[in-house]
Image (cartoon, rainbow, N blue to C red; front, side, top):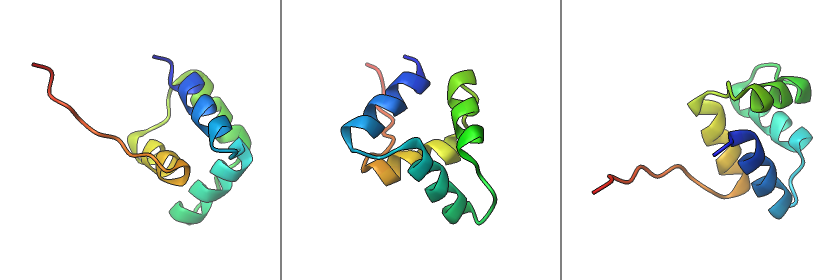
Length: 69
């Protein structure tokens, strides 16, 4: 699974732009966070778990850990 593609698909399905996601992260972290920064992290696959949680929260999703049996 490529995080870049998955996040972009979720954002598209929820009608949320990457710009809106970057602004949301910036607001929540109270720290400058540009669309270029978000786009670069998604392309490189270097987005951290905190940023991913914020993105998913904005999109109406959450991370769930399920034990493999």
